[in-house]
Amino acid sequence: MNWTRRGVLAATVSVSLAGCLGDSDGIGPYEPEGGSEDVTVEPMTASPDETAVSETALPIADEQLPVSYPLETLRDAVVDGGVPQDGIPSIDDPAFEPVADVDDRFREDDPVFGVVREGEARAYPQSILVHHEIVNDEIGGESVAVTYCPLTGTAMGFERGGVEFGVSGNLVNSNLIMYDREGESMWPQMLGTAIEGPLEAASLREFPVHWNTWNDWRAAYPDSTVLTEDTGYVRDYGDDPYGMYNPVSGYYREDSDPIFEPLRSDDREPPKRMVLGARPPEGPLSIDLETLRDERLLEIEHEDATLLAVHDRSLDLGFLYRNPSEETFVLEEDRIVDENDDAYAPDDVPLERVYAYDAMWFAWTGFYPETTHFG
Amino acid sequence: MAESSTASGRWRRAVRRRIRDTSRAVGLAVGRFDALAITALVAVGYLAGYLWAANLLSVRSGLGVSVTVVDEPLVRMLERTGQLQFEPVALVDLWLVRLLVSPIDVLVGVVLAGLVGLNLALAYLALVQPRSCGIGAGAGAAASLPALLSGTACCAPVIVIALGVQVSGTVLTVLPWLLPLGVVLLLGSLVYVGGLVET
Image (cartoon, rainbow over all chains, first blue to last red; front, side, top):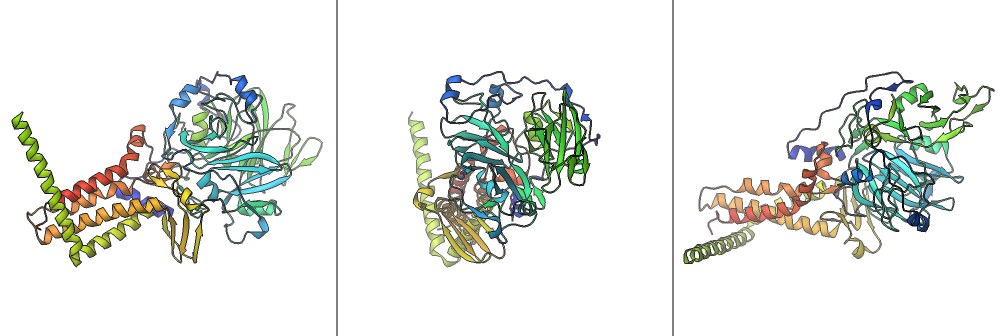
């Protein structure tokens, strides 16, 4: 019904749908695409208030995450998403059921967000999170926030130290701005750094939340649990107001325009193309997920660093590792094999993992316009 | 000063007369079966359209029959989900129809639907017993549109999601006023068409 509702409303005001941006120019997988080197950024220079950091219950990262704009610029770019604070209600008392107990609630390719932490595996259906965006949960006895922004396609986890997060109703670069219910600092999800409030310029501790399909998840984690529709609210969880992922339509089509003007535009990829983005100290980088899916193993020279990007076929995920000794790895079947012929699962390569998350291209390059892109 | 006062008085008398004419026309509309039937039909149709556009009503197969009610509905119904939208407190499945019951949204929808229905009924009466040859149906129909486009879903206005285009800050500023604008337009249209009906 979604596309029908949207189509009828659109026709009502007789405005045609937006045109598409150009496709990728098809530059090879191992070389960064041009353009990013020419972008100059004015990174955040602000430091968090040490007293506020010492007094908050929120776990604050030891190192600030990189932010490519002065905070004032980001604050000026905040727009009202049309909903009041908590108008999109977070799930604060989530209920779960075993994977084995799920009947026909999902189709095989329906997206779920997977978290594996402290020996516990949990799936959060996209169909539920699109209506709530934040789940204040506890996994393995640790309080965490599992968050999803439908407009930027980003699913990210944050430690919360018992403090709840809520949806502010505002957006920057189309991205969800969370607020914490302790001091009401404003945290754009993709930045993981407060742009306003007592914890301004402080960064949260992040952890990976992966896009999976229901079929892949239940095959990989048959003993895990899944978030139920018993959220404390009534919503039409079969109805995504933006479109569909299975099959892809509406807002999620990769050549469709974002609703809100990005901080910066970059037409090296279609706007909603999914990329794996990371922000190591050498500078932000992004990898086209389709390319990674095809190549499955990429050795990446990024500034002074050597990185290894690996695709996990069983869960259709990308992992990024730091490879400082430039050790050679090869792909054999679904295993990553090192120079000693030792084989590893894609998510268990004995290298330092670099935190990375999936995002729509326009959102990633809007926040990190200087990104080095491997398309 | 006297001239101004006289002009002001004339204007006030004209307004009072127009309101009286409109009240009589409304009375005629609800007193005549044909006009009342038009009011009811249009109102029910508009209410369904309003709830559908606000993501509160959908049609799909295989729903069965069930009712789910949230805890503390009287508290929950007052929580805002949009500029002038409120939390649903129940989900009702009736075979092909899924309705999220948000009492305040339904109330707003009923008021709007009533105004739209009366507009169309008065336009009908203006046609069948005209004081002049003016036809007000177009004004009433046009006035019914802004409120239909005023809904918000998740983190964007419904109409913006529907159009799939980028919006400017100016447009975002205007969108919250669509519902109040719709009410004003419907009232204005009602008064205008009411004056065309021979009572």
